[in-house]
Length: 405
Ligand code: FEO
Image 1: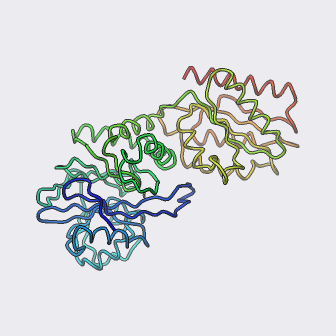
Image 2 (image 1 turned 120 degrees about the vertical axis):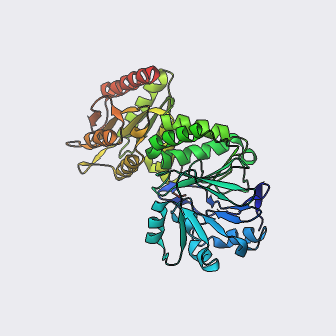
Image 3 (image 1 turned 30 degrees about the horizontal axis):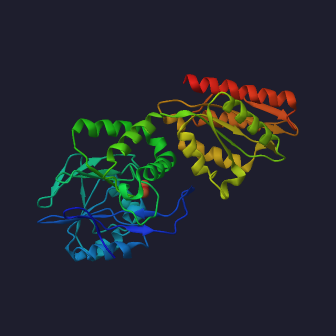
């Protein structure tokens, strides 16, 4: 297995997980666990490692460059097991090897592994380690993605090892953005951001501001998942800035499920009203999520670039449909309300008795930080002509509001 050079003495030595299809409720076409080897004149550092069970690829790639026993510094940017799973094996192979990480990571590792005898070196922001012609600079990045997270910057080569930040879940032959293509790389990064980073958006803005003020020149961004940004580092930085601010298109996402096509009729008619005003719409039937692009993790990716969200459900035994409950639970976790630019929305649905789903959805939208512009629209049984006319007008009115945001 081959190591892939990023710069003189700097190599990608990660593992490609071709088969992963679901990760924390997120659908993905595989992923990579990126590890990096930095070979200085005096020391050799391994930055991050792999998920348990994927050590083989990493070790074979390291052997392509050096004898793994020559690694005399380990950098652990993040506790989560997809980046630390090889530490038990590495600490056994390299007894006493210093592990550079944050204080929060020491606590985290102690909860995941038997760390007796591990040689932790806790870092503070801007502390340096000299490898001999290669200088590692640490930058604490709490909550990007866990409280223990940090970045590592390689000064001479201007490479930022950013761990989860700027990552993408993709398994591919390509290691670099210009090999995969800018649009595809940004699309995968957008899904990653929409599902994992949106709740942390205020921290992203603060950290980007901090890094800018440090005046650290960044030529390459090497995250812990997916491709490495070497040609489009500026594009992913500006995309993170825009996504964190909640910059969105004149677009509405409609998410719903249906029992006897009544809520479906409402969704279609709302979409017609929105389109009539020249606003884009994406209609996502949750029932199809297991077959097509309306899995919850794809729906929240659509929501990231939408200014409005409509959620529909029939009432089933005084509750929302199970698929809609699943979606709302996921949406609460993602919390698009954390973005600076607010999103608007409302609920709709049909019922065969007392109703109730629309009230539950309206409360759910508020909990997720969506600004509800009305109390929703709920119809008995099947929407009649007048009720469908109201749906159409509600769609038009929403489109007007979207265009003025
Ligand atoms: Fe890729 Fe937070 O782990």
